[in-house]
Length: 348
Image (cartoon, rainbow, N blue to C red; front, side):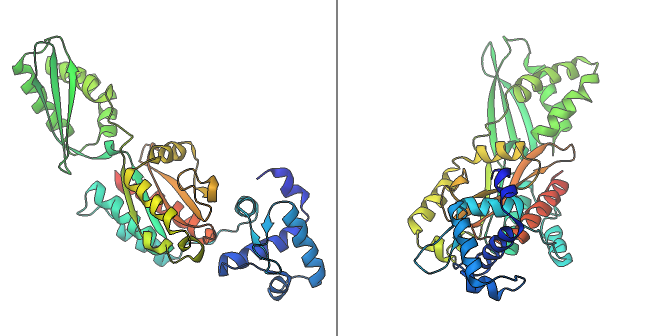
């Protein structure tokens, strides 16, 4: 929303617009001058309010779905409200404790923590909770180098979640089988229970100080096999819960075909790399409204997303809520923000 429109509207127009949007967020129905008058806090006649609502409609902030049925905010209007007029609430102590407890890593794998976080944020928001993470955050259980032919090695990476990944390394026959076995054992002992991001940091600090031939060779193999050959970020982990909550919204439920397409997109994981890239550019919580929502291009849907970071302040994923455009933003934005910070603390 352009700043000049916010400056151009007088305080009275902003107040009436704010009251109308708050009524819409609460009820989901259009509001007229009588509804706004009943909300109180205005020393204006019904005719004056109608005139202001008409001006706001001309600015593209409101529209009338039916004749004489009141007005509702447009996508432009919702963006204007979110950017300039929204007042955020506070998360209750109970909700904070609930999030901390549910997102605890005790006895849980990396994937289980993210899955639980998605369930927790869905339950607290009453809409769909979503967590996205690149797969290279999974912890390594074992690695092994084996010779394929005179010029190539295969690096086998086995992860704690049972996944196995094979990578080809060109070495021109430089390393014999004995060295490869020693390097495999040495690196497995070094990197067990570490993810790719942690391995990169270890290579850059601790192992670079190494002096022995085994350490030097191991470092070179890791550089070639892991650091210079990163995993495919186009296939991230997706954890989604509470989809059925979306169908409770009257506007969304009228368009079931688009909702089915939305869930198909999620299954295909299309556009999720874009979420991670957007999260990486964001300083905090981002709000995507209606068709401006690059992932769920559905006029009735909004998405509130925040990146979560590890102890080194590197972005390692995103968490958020998907719901109707009339989300309770004042509650959901701080909820997503808080949960993203908790996830960042417990992941490493």
